[in-house]
Each structure stands twice: as structure tokens, then as C-alpha cells.
Image 1 (cartoon, rainbow, N blue to C red):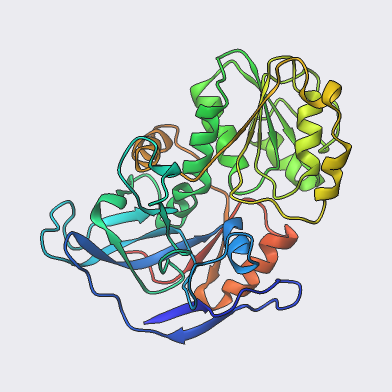
Image 2 (cartoon, rainbow, N blue to C red):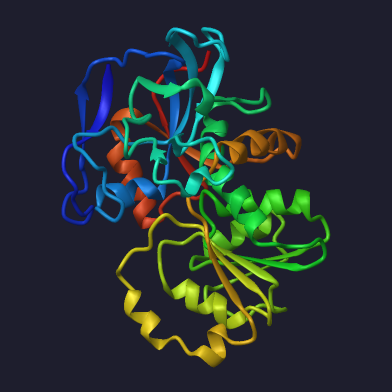
Length: 339
């Protein structure tokens, strides 16, 4: 099968084409496993973290990708949850304990990092960690829901927001544009403020219903009760903490932060950024329950997914565009035609 393979951890600035298109063996399912013929796979910032070594794969080579939509191609013995031909999705969680806090377990394994992922024609997963895709979404629309949407849903729950309060979103890419719509559905009377570095992102936020949009460090009309940060940088963390109201909570939705502006954290001031019982909460991975609950809610909204498609062989370009913020919304690799 065709796959885009990572053979070495490398900085994207040093090597803008870290993935190699090659032929690899098609996976064979074991007991209660399924092989999924991949239709599309989303491109997530976590792939940059894997490639550049912030959360490195434990072994190389590896096939990245964890926002996967496809159809069940073959099934292992004892696999009964799906039928051949069923459309399913696979997210960042490849396997874990099945407990409520399985995202925190040492047994957590990530799709596309700890095991081969979806930048390929076929992918292997235990049937418990595959999810039915609501009919309202095309394959491409569904792909970003498996991480950007699912982890965004978890972030929104961790924010501890009540209807009528003020939510801030800092960063407005693949996850942010889904969280805004989700928050509008769950908390219809909340005001939503978006902090984004580019004018295009701010316009996009207003198009989707944000009450206000400003630069990363701009003062908002009101101090938010909670802010969800989806950026790879540290500057937005400081800015968010400074503008939170007393007792507010910052939720950092990132597997890793990049080191480029980490020195800014040396300027943190307790009285401005942390005092008055402000809180910081990180999002660690995602659970099976998160995706099982989120996908039906996403269909009921229904979420509008802004996306740009690339062919599988252009995965390196998609990663470069993600790094340079050249494409709004989500990015999706097209591996096979829709059924």
C-alpha cells in the first residue's frame, strides 16, 4: 500500500519534506481488530510535534496521521462491532485502558506516533477505538472532528463554563473554528471573544459568529470567565492569563508547545497573571468517551467544517502550510474517493 513515512525526526525548517511516499505492507488484523481502507486523513499540528521531536515516535519509521475516516476493509477474529464496508473514524487515541481517565494512563498509545496512522491507504485499529461517522458529514468534513473537534470538545468541558458567561478562544485554526460553533450550540447566551494574530483569522471568527475578534494581546470588551488556547506558542498563554477575570480558567489545548518564544514566560508576574485564584488546566489527549459523545453532538449542530484538501503525496506541503498558517480552517489529505 502507499504511505507517507517518517524515517527521522527533523526540524521542518531544515527539511520541509520529512515524509517519504513509499510502498509498505498492508496491515493484517488480529483478534477484535479491523483494517480500515482510508478515505481521508486530517493534518494536525501534533504531526509537527512528532516530526520535530517535541513528542517523538518511540520507534522509526512510522506513518503519521490520526484524524482518519474510511471504511472497514477486513476484520480479525471476534470482531463484531462493525460490518465490512461500514464507515468509521479513528482519532488520536489508538488504545488505552478503557477507564474514564484512560487519557492519563501510561498505557495510552497514540495513532500515528506510537503505531502507524492514517497517512496511508490502510490502517489497523482495535474495534473499540473506531467510531461510526454521522451521515451528515462527508469523509473530508468528518476527519478534523476526530481530533480538532474531539479535543476541542474536551477543552470546552474542562473550561467549566456556564451559559451566559464569557468564553475566549486564542488561536483560530482547525480546532478553534469548531469550538466556537460548539460553544454557540451548548451555551447559546455566552459571549465569545477570539484572539488571533492574523486579520484573516479574525474575519473568519466574526463570520462564524464571534462577538468580538482582536489581536493576541488586544484587551477584550469584557474579562473572560474562561479562555481556551489552541496555539503552539507561549505568548498567548501570558496574554490570556493577564486578561482573565478573577477566578477564571485558562485551558491549554496542545500536546506540546514550541520553544521559539518560551523565554517570554520569564516575564510572568504573579500579581498580574496568576493572583486572584486564576487557574491553568491542560488538556491531555482524548478518551474514547469524548469521541463517542462528541460526534453525535457535532451532527446535531451541525458543525460547519472549513477545510482544504491535498492529495496524499502532498502531505509535506500540507504540513508546511500548517506551520506557516497559509490555509484557514482544517487541512485534509485525500487518499481515496468517497464511497
